[in-house]
Length: 122
Image (cartoon, rainbow, N blue to C red; front, side, top):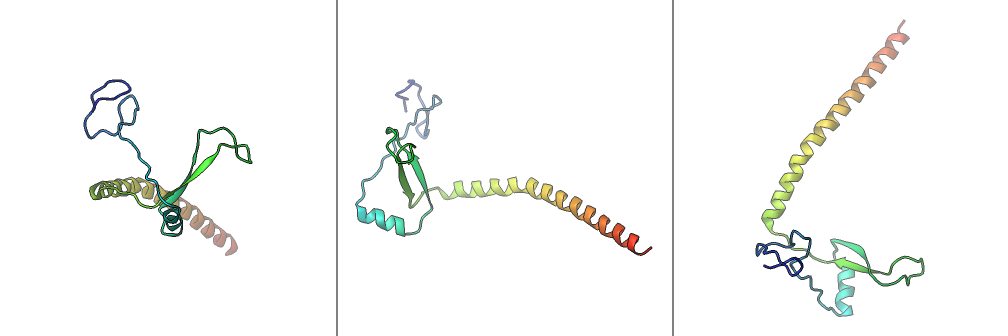
């Protein structure tokens, strides 16, 4: 696919060009207010506020924003598996560091308790 911004030829599966231009078009489907109300009351993955490029027309002086309700998202199964494997592998060093910190704190606490009881026993 040829980038309309810089003219570079990209792979057909590329989502963005090296220049940063988005090669895929994001389309927003028009929905009825009934569908929007259904999405707001149904199960949600998350919501986010998107600032618009309009002038300051809000009461608090900030940029005007539009609420976006994420109803569904599609991700290939193997991508999810690879993501979860990466998260599991990244958690190993974190658990080792937390274990070391717990060991040090426990040793200091145990040493303090032993010293306290040895002073009381005299």
